[in-house]
Length: 217
Ligand code: AMP
Image 1 (cartoon, rainbow, N blue to C red):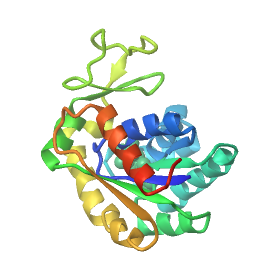
Image 2 (cartoon, helix red, strand yellow; image 1 turned 60 degrees about the vertical axis):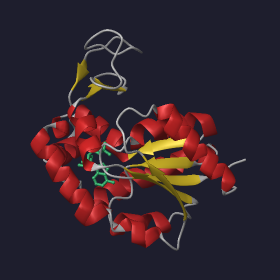
Image 3 (cartoon, rainbow, N blue to C red; image 1 turned 135 degrees about the vertical axis):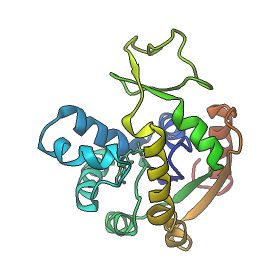
């Protein structure tokens, strides 16, 4: 099983990919998470990429492709993988083609006002990376992670001017991938046009469609 979860920033890719990965016992490969880990480590690579991320720009293809290849190789011991946040350019999609076939692209359609509402109130656990939302997915105790109790923070790139930059990048560099995959993979189209649809409901829809297309057992 090899899936790509695809959609604009704030579509919920990471949240749904986490649930799907644990249900299907496959690896979740999130380039955004891996990139944030690198930045946290503050070694050469992290220092080189931090500015791209904080300005809402894409990290150069050669760096991301290297990171993702390694992660896919490591995931080979699992049943497969779901890619979250990759590919984001045609170049990245071509690199992925050279590794193997993608079975399905799970495409999330989300209106812009939902994206902005989600991203501007998103908070992340400093330690385990769990995602909360001050409006729709509140932690039990204000400012602390339910799972590990660590402080929550707002991502630098979830600030309003950076959100706008990320949306522009999505439109110009990432959306064209829908055409790229048209004849290469099955498409599962999921519309999420309200902020308060519980993640479980969306995941159930995705699983149902994957089953209907015989992509999972
Ligand atoms: P995400 O968590 O997926 O929203 O990613 C956060 C940021 O990490 C993006 O805005 C980019 O700066 C960087 N990033 C994540 N995935 C990629 C990718 N596939 N290609 C280039 N940059 C990426």
